[in-house]
Amino acid sequence: QVQLVESGGGSVQAGDSLRLSCTAPGFTSSRCGMDWYRQAAGKQREWVSTISFPDSTSYADSVKGRFTISKDTVKDTVYLQMDSLKPDDTAMYSCQARGPVCTMRFRRGQGTQVTVSS
Image 1: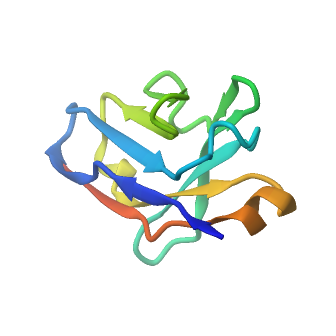
Image 2: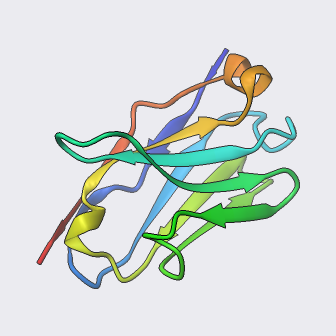
């Protein structure tokens, strides 16, 4: 099993941008899709966005128009570009491969913290 590794989180001001990365060797050649989730302190885990093979994307209403998911097949990386960040976006963000076959092959990452202050 290959570990997914997230990076790119940080502490920013409202209105700023961040780009999160989720990397695993062999991911983009696997034909697996990828989900981004987030979990704020004291709240349930929330689905944020999906990129399905080959390139279809979907977003939660709360982030639509502000977040963009994409992938780089050369770097085996899925990105989550987050613009116009709000304090409500503060959470631990993690990536997860889609479907039982893919989740068996790629282990969910530890997450990366995003903190947005007003």
